[in-house]
Length: 570
Ligand SMILES: *[C@@H]1O[C@H](CO)[C@@H](O)[C@H](O)[C@H]1NC(C)=O
Ligand SMILES: *[C@@H]1O[C@H](CO)[C@@H](O)[C@H](O)[C@H]1NC(C)=O
Ligand SMILES: *[C@@H]1O[C@H](CO)[C@@H](O)[C@H](O)[C@H]1NC(C)=O
Ligand SMILES: *[C@@H]1O[C@H](CO)[C@@H](O)[C@H](O)[C@H]1NC(C)=O
Image (cartoon, rainbow, N blue to C red; front, side, top):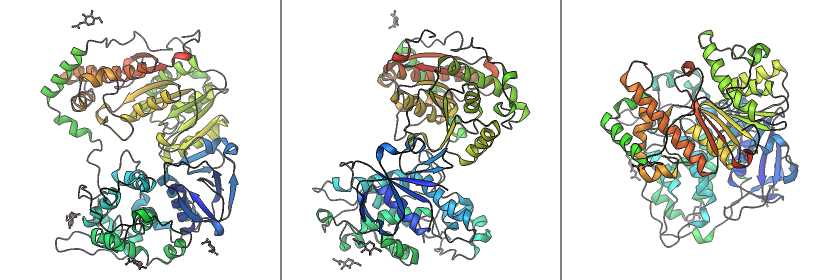
């Protein structure tokens, strides 16, 4: 049976809690989920607004903050623990899991359709999807900071205005035909089309209710009741219309009983204005999303200009002669089948190269790890690297961190077959991971994921062993900006840097003239990463994998924090 861990600030029938807890409990009730609820009494963060929920009809267990099981302490709250070895975190992922569990128990459950067409509602992570970011980050932040409004210039919260604009835009569907033909939804009231044939929003994602509506409903219920009726009816009429439609759902009405409102009198003013926001749909293919084809249009002259700027920086961009740890012996004949890439069902054509990649990353870990270390394999996929390390280092704990459930399920099967007991699983984005660890690894973590990994390792003063990938997709996110290092930041703008990262992906054909330039750009981007880590006192080793041909993206960065350098091996 799964357990959900939630932060609360007070334990009483009327319980004060962060907004994520309120939304999660609301959905547990909405779906009549029987998941075990564990409330963790947490010290209130007074900089964030808290909300109230009536706990009298919930069954729950209270857990002291020092008694949280290890699994649940690895990731931010709320999280769900499955089989006592797997932690699911991130608000949208947690809520999806609750819905999935009730759907798995009862195939005709009324919540089945909440996950939307193909079960993909809010599945993309917030870095990749504006919609997930809106539901999981932006809207949540609005609720947390509601008390900090600038009362001299009263404007409605940006998230409320963005949602109003979203609802005024036509419904975005990737394949309307397939969607209307899909049997599961055939019975649902499809389509109120305007004269141009565009679908209007009945619900947040289109014509039927999804998990996104419920998350937004809880937030909007609080927001709409915070501002005066005159204001909201005038400024956000479509949101009010949607809200009233949500109120026709009998389960929503029932759940509202658990959600008493805290009146905030100082916000109940009459004269609010509509803030300046882009009038656009929030549910769309993300324009910032990585499309390799776009890189072709980076102009050669722009790349050359950026290359000149880098030349002027006058720092060494030399790679080490050989990768860190290359002298360590790793005998594949000692490794059981299920811990090899072949046992991970890799196609035969890729086996040899995959083995070579894995041993390049594994060797520095074997060289640096001490008994008892916690090692996190970030973006672990189905566990090729993490499982190999776990087998070779039985005295260490290995955490496989991956946000794709399917990949992690494949890893779990391999781990079962190998009977390894030193592996734990985290199904989440890496920003929700908060456990302590000693070494972080990532093999071909896409684009900015490599930088998130390095940043996460630096925060925990951990060693990193990273082989980057997808340079062309590097772009700022709410956690980091490019270039990374102060030295680069002073000399080259974000835009100029982006020409280099785009060009760094052009290493595909060996004879292509772009390839040489591509490798130069890869070296520049990874040198910037190296300089960034050095700012934090890291010693960074930077070399090509051996053999160089084992992958086109063949750079290895090994960073060791100052206080771990004392180790005689280094
Ligand atoms: C909490 O809910 C219970 C049961 O629905 C109800 O009897 C009680 O009055 C509620 N408490 C408050 C303070 O609203
Ligand atoms: C606002 O709406 C609520 C519910 O519809 C109603 O009870 C209340 O009287 C209204 N307030 C004003 C000031 O119109
Ligand atoms: C946004 O654009 C739609 C038409 O595309 C329009 O109907 C709506 O009024 C606009 N909303 C705002 C707030 O400007
Ligand atoms: C570049 O740096 C080297 C040593 O770091 C120095 O000797 C050289 O003068 C510098 N060149 C320029 C053009 O600044």
